[in-house]
Length: 606
Ligand code: AGP
Image (cartoon, rainbow, N blue to C red; front, side):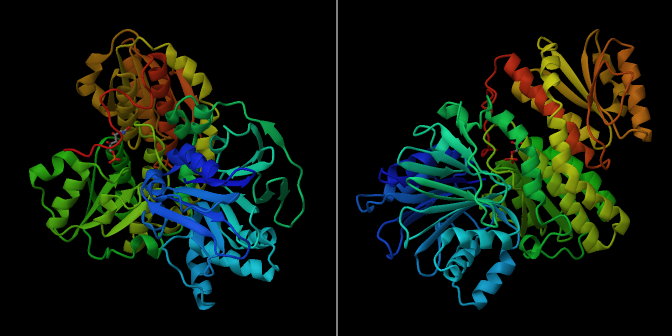
């Protein structure tokens, strides 16, 4: 997820562009850059720097030329680390066209190869730069019409994108395009804006136009033309923004955590993009998986729970032994590790010291390292042989939600890849899993559409002193994750159990009215029957059952229905209601949802 802003109008562009970038920095802060159109036909003015926006602002002295139109970008790195060269905007070879991008261009490698054959010289590792060069050629073939060129280029792109471009031949003109990534027009008086979201320009105007899928916006200070990819002019659907500036940063949600819960379908879709039928060379080029005889997953907290789900998929589809280890414990027991071990550190931040030290221990003893990480260029991926980046975008709330979901998806993708490489996965099953993966974003969307009543239900248990979570199979790690969410957000005692473990002690915890959340295995499965018995056992002792299930369940006092999917993928759907329960409990208890007490987003100490 990146921050995108364009300004054209009566003001000098630098100020509104910088202000917009400041408002959008929550969308990405790996690098920042600005391009300004100054004098027609001359090179564009451009400055860009790795790191937070402040690094860029520091170098913007009085040398910035006076310009009334420009574009700016804050980056959350996906393809290519957070460096000056990879920062946006990206230029064509003449330095007269600048482009910024949010999203993922799935076919950028083939586009780049074709463009290099045409003599284009690339300076970065990004997917975006391919589009800048493509647009430059297209503009020439459209006799300098930037909007017509943008329409042609969009037809050649696969993936998700918000694009903004300017050309020095036409100072004052900005052309934008979007597909599966947001772009909104800010309608001003003698000025107009384009941005990822309204927070970039809300202090200038509350009039906005939402762009639809595959639509092009062609703006100047006093004109806005919106077309589809055929060039057909479309009507303006103008609306009044009702949010204030801070609400706009949260997309209108009360907390970043709730926004990130609702971003999960897109985060999952972006993480799956181009990977369902195989992990391309980009991901696996640095590692040789021959002769691996053991997988060890090391992680902490929520990432550890994702690893526990991964164990089921990797063992079943790749037929290889998997250990899932708490990173903080792993190296201190001096485990047996050698070159046949594939170590899989899972980390959203890529900076968790426990996970980093566990990884270093295993590397020193010969292990090969395949990381799963959400933060491009962070320490763990930098020290790994290969990395499968999750594309959840920045996760601002301390409590991990969309990162967890994309870690689960990464586990399935890794398990499929290992199954293919080792020739152990049944082809029919593989095709079924691929189909079910593709449906996950829509199924998570379905769950999110039904969670509203859950918020009221949660408040019934606001004063409970404890909540128990039961699960079996992949539902067990989901139970652990649900308990962790409740602990870290509601500061309430919570514990996750394997359903079969209850009778070995924990059932003594059940009191009259104890809330128990049961994550049900797939309808009709043997484990669903076993879990139904567990529910009877705890109900008989006074428990109140909230069941998360893909089918009706008479024994549940409250039922949260989730769609059916493959038994391993059910974890992605079952966890969503648990996230909402934890969120609502925190709100009901008046806690700081996005910054819970005693916690940090990234634990960079041991
Ligand atoms: C989960 O909600 C917490 N934010 C925490 O458990 C987190 O998952 C853990 O600290 C690991 O962080 P990482 O993924 O950045 O390594």
